[in-house]
Image (cartoon, rainbow, N blue to C red; front, top):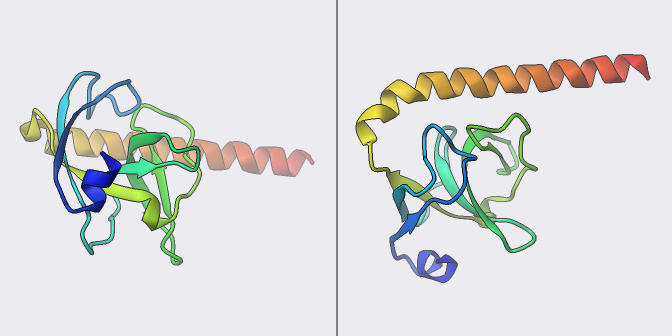
Length: 130
């Protein structure tokens, strides 16, 4: 898949796992398109090659000034380690149920930002105790 995306081809994949639930369910077919020269934006669901050569589909929560991306699975509480943009091989273009995307987006964003606030509060409490 990585080589196809790097060479500019779109690929259709079957999602495995529940990290992006409810946006993407296990077994759902997805169209992933190469980024070409576009930068990933906050809210995009991207296909990432991790340092250990594994791959994951997660949502971009933040783009840092240096270009690194903060991602997280919609069903996760913990944020992923920031990744360099060259680790992003493509982004999800279509899911089986595009019509629900607008309705789910608000709920997903609220949940992700609540997780981020909770993580920050836990970090601050730990830092104050030390």
